[in-house]
Image 1 (spheres, rainbow, N blue to C red):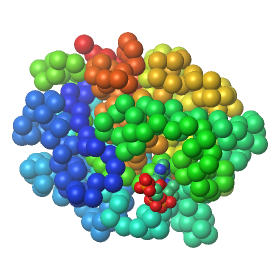
Image 2 (image 1 turned 60 degrees about the vertical axis):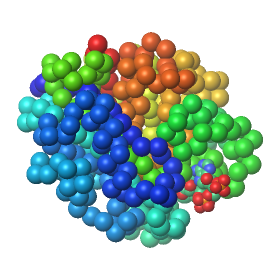
Image 3 (image 1 turned 180 degrees about the horizontal axis):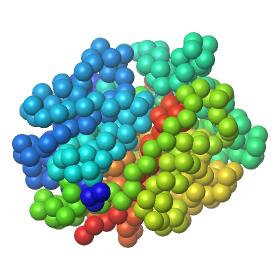
Length: 387
Ligand code: COA
């Protein structure tokens, strides 16, 4: 297997982007990543794009070929990857495997979602398809409701509090306030979260990631050719993915995500590293409880200790471990198919030392963690500074 590096990274501003459509977003992110790698486009041999719900959200399927067309990349093979909110992370893994295997040298990986062209009810229906349609969505369980059940279970088992959940949102909004690409660039307080309107108790509006438009892209190539394109390549040293039941009721635990635990274990083994070696991580905080479970399942904190650790500031920028420096899904936004690729963009910027005010000091090793649905898919990648 060949070693693989990121040689280009780019993204659009995340938010309610009324003036731009699906195509505009992915073209902007794609061009930014090509410019970053000092490539014109003709060098790209294959394209993988994460998109979760373009059919329901904009009435457009067959987006792999569509994006190759509008990026001027035809006739190269272009593949749409769908794994709910983990579509971007799984697309990255496909690109990684294509380069690692020797099948292709230079590969582009993108992620894109245009979510604000339909009303909130239709967004909830489209997102609900990431769960079990027959057992969950049909009976009215949307994603805030499903994660609320997980939060209740975590509170019951470990005494996690609503203030601890709120402290995830406060930290991530603070990080997002230093990120010009973020949807929400305003700091908030614990009170803002606790007094925001109920969505599915105990989760309130500020415990939820928002509905977002946006796109992100990275360019991959073999590590031994990376210096030709990029002064500061970042190596992907591990890629692991795991799956579980779509429906929550089939899981072995409601207060943790088993697929994350399996993907993390395999990624650490592949990288020959341990959780303590990671300095900066982008984790899947689609709801505040999701970040608490993630930092436990990834081994950064013991089970049941994630809420307290967050409340004590141990996951803030330049503390024990810098979690969600981009602002995460909560503060930076969550255009579902784009999120997994945006996480890779943020870690590439962090390891290159180009993250500006939100830079994690001396970051050498980073991790991304992307979840589909309530945990039926989990993808973990580990990255190393390679210059
Ligand atoms: N965090 C902070 N502010 C938010 C927000 C969020 N998650 N969602 C909306 N807002 C803000 C909007 O910016 C807007 O502010 P403004 O009045 O200053 O412009 C205001 O709240 C009202 O926005 P609106 O779109 O009407 O909110 P809503 O009540 O329709 O939607 C949620 C709120 C929480 C239901 C929606 O954001 C949501 O469904 N989030 C979860 C998405 C999801 O499930 N993703 C997949 C995860 S697996």
